Image 1 (cartoon, rainbow, N blue to C red):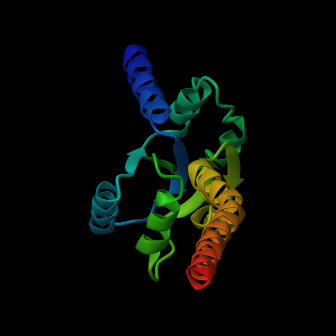
Image 2 (cartoon, helix red, strand yellow):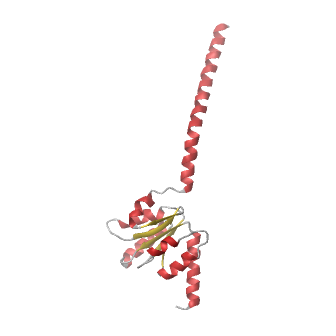
Image 3 (cartoon, one colour):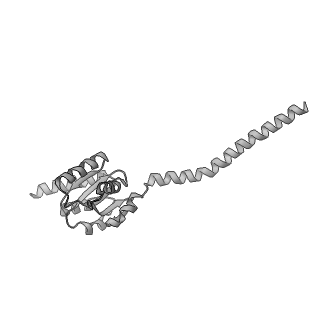
Length: 174
């Protein structure tokens, strides 16, 4: 492959990676053509982009990412590697779990999710349960609003009761 072609491929990979928020590096080697096709269809259905690339090119593309230090992922770039890119933090992890069924592939090598690096296939369960930043903020706001809403609803219901009581007393006095 010519140097210009490699440069163009690296730039294309870097653009793909920077366009998505979450990155998973997996090993899909050993899958036959039928299973690879099934995996690609499932990725398309779940809006996860699957890209198979050489480790050296992938490493260069990861080095080009501005604002994200992905150097901790470099040691996992050994053997056959494929990347899964998504805008939903745990979509690739759920996809891997769903696709595996009884098989052992794809294997999670590492992931960059919510500004954290996860290394190893044993992190798959943790990645499935990771909540997005917006989900956590929503839960926090809900927790903060709950006591305030309880107090307001009690005041409103009590106000109606007191008002009803005063009205009844006024009618009795007349």
